[in-house]
Amino acid sequence: MTDSFHTRAFDELFASQPIMGVFRNMTPADAVARAARAWDLGVVHVEIPVQTPDALPTLRAVAGAARERGRQVGAGTIVDVDQVAEVQAAGASYTVSPGLSDDVARASAARGLAHLPGVSTPSEVLAARREGLLWTKAFPASVLGPSWVSAVLGPFPDQRFVATGGMDAHSAAEFLAAGVRVVAVGAAFDDPVQRARITDLLEAHGRR
Image 1 (cartoon, one colour):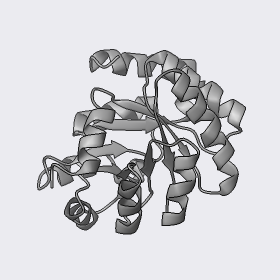
Image 2: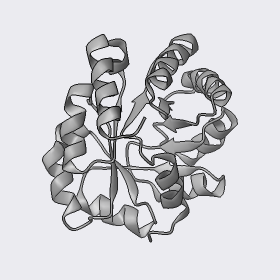
Image 3: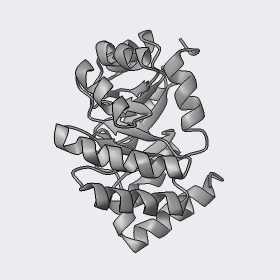
């Protein structure tokens, strides 16, 4: 189902964007500061995981800062349908999950939010495709490894993967070379060496 709502949305959202930021367990002020650092580097997208309701103020603060820059923010760790309405109210433009849930994907679409589910097996990739989810996140990517991505792209060459979980700026290049479309990093934005590497990756892919 290449023409699904989710696929069209992420094809546009992630076009020419090889790096995104994921900022977990941070205060609103700290998350806004790190998101601003990412945006200043040329990284367009950031995700705020909301595994507990305490994270909603952080999502709200980052979404507000994003609107001022014409950016969009995703809400991560969405594991049940009740969260979808909460994160939309907080300003999220799309939802991200550590696993695959048809109910969450459908609830997100019903509210006009694209959904990015986590997968770690070919069977989960196939199930995601049946739901029209050609964009999926390989999670945990550091455990799966870039060879997993290359292998799964064999039978599913049009699948679009976002590598999430244990990623940094140094490992990003290997995953991008394996066929990943986007690599999500977090603490890398606090490290001057890794920030320089992120800039190199953005420039190498012509995506700034």
